[in-house]
Image (cartoon, rainbow, N blue to C red; front, side, top):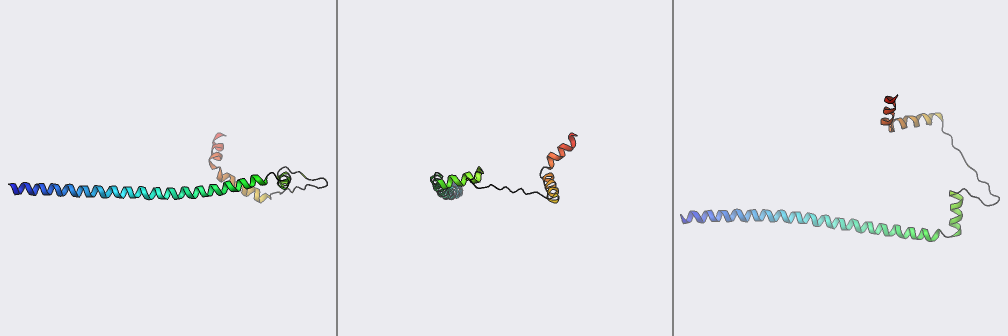
Length: 123
């Protein structure tokens, strides 16, 4: 009877150790996954910081240049359509052909198909 109890005790201990080993293996795998994801996130954030620092430097440079006379003149000419005395401003008007207009209508129809279907049913 004692041998039977010893075998039962050893089997229970063996099952417990196997279960503990499986549990620890799963925990190590999950922890490793989180560690790798965290390292990847840190690398991505460092890249983003570098990009933002570069953008910030470019914006600071643009801000410093925006107070110069050449920049103010360029912006006035391009955005406000201003000219110096004696200069003439010329505008070009591009007209679309009827074929382009037809294609544009077809394109708009298919882009806004739901709106067009609702318009059909509202009549």
